[in-house]
Amino acid sequence: MTESIQEEDMTARASDDEGKNRKNGLYREVSPELAENMKQGWADTERRDLEPLPQTAHTARRRAEVSARFPGELLVIPAGIPKVRANDTNYPFRPSSDYVYLTGDQSQDAVLVLEPGDGGGHQAVAYLRPRSDRENGEFWLDYHGELWDGRRNSLTENEQFLGLPCRDVRTLPERLGEATGPIRLLRGYDAGVEAALNDKVTAERDTEFRVALSEMRLVKDEFEISELRFACEATARGFEDVVRILGTDTPTLERAIEGTFFMRARIDGNDVGYASVCAAGEHATTLHWVRNDGEARPGDLLLLDAGVETRTLYTADVTRTLPVDGRFTPLQRKVYDAVYAAQEAGIAAVKPGAAYRDFHDAAQRVLAEHLVAWGLLGDRSVDEVVELGLYRRWTLAGTGHMIGLDVHDCAKARTEMYVDGTLHPGMMLTVEPGMYFQPDDLTVPEELRGIGVRIEDDILVTEDGNENLSAHLPRTADEVEAWMARLRG
Ligand code: GLY
Ligand code: MN
Ligand code: MN
Image 1 (cartoon, rainbow, N blue to C red):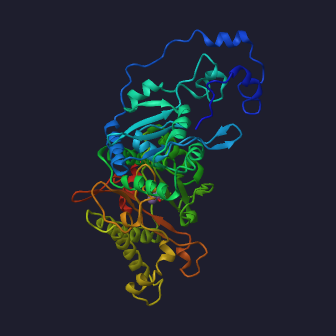
Image 2 (tube, rainbow, N blue to C red):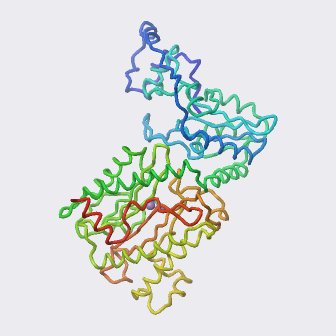
Image 3 (cartoon, protein in one colour):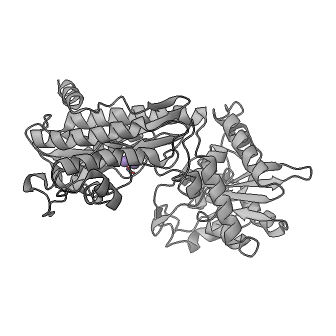
């Protein structure tokens, strides 16, 4: 929650605030003449024709679902507050995904409250920062006044934009202070709200609430599917941008690859949905290689795992493993083809009614078959290797996860609803098998050491099977080579 600044004398405050705000020059006194001058001469910019967000019908339906699940309880869902990077600079703000899911809004410091009604149901209210006051000077004297942070929607504009009543977030402490009935809070985003509700909520009930919100997001609605489709399309454009800068006879910095993809994410979307893995050569054997401080050399493979996050905050999560100079060596192709076969088996197992674990098991078995056939597991049978999990030395990770607003979406869902659950139409998940031979692994032939391959696609469960939303990007080794040659002209 924001501190109460409404009644303060901002003129007096300016000179006290030295350490916090040197940049705007307020270490100097504000004369009464200047304070008076700054109050006047501003046009009325209220927008009376603001179009509602396109997803308002969906956010209203989602709030109704939450309401039905927790009748008679006050429900509090904060967007969160910015995280401090140092002193008065923050990391870029991203609101909590559950807040976005239920409002479509992306404001910082905001809180959605579902107030239980006397006759059942809930009234949703968004508590938001209003426009900055011009009379008391906060718009220019407060470091988070609109003159510094940019114009915000007025509360009236936001009512139109979000399709729900909006109030000043500075009135929320009073509302929470007087609340008496059962309350549930989404924890982890706003320490001020948590402190205000400290003795009115319990960890156990709040965990139930968080789990319920996570599980609601398991099946995507048509708005979400269309956003995820766009995220995949934009991600494919980002991969093409990267191929165009890969040197065929000179190294390319992993940093340049990261920056190139990021530019596409900012232009077509909001951001990257997670730190891009730009892993060339032996870096590809490190699953979360995000240091990206090496270089991609001709002859090496580049494992690029990256996703564009849309402006509505849905992210793709796609991996391709590319020969930097455009042609796989026979050995690279052998490993690539094995991973491709595993991914094909995994994708084929994605269908409504299937156990969630089926696609993982199908893909991992194919990986194990190849590892056994290559003689890496002595004379053990595939069944034995699978039973004992011995193949996992080189496959390491699970084969996929839900995606959506978060790259690892719905992570708080109960096991029986997720990994021990069943696939339903509208679920969206990645299928991403890989093989990773560490550079210091003495149990594999030297030629394999330092090779890492992953192929990752975003798969929508449909009524009769699945659809690969990231299929714009080639997957077979031949297709990858032809695509790279085409892009490089
Ligand atoms: N890029 C994160 C993941 O593949 O899960
Ligand atoms: Mn990924
Ligand atoms: Mn993934």
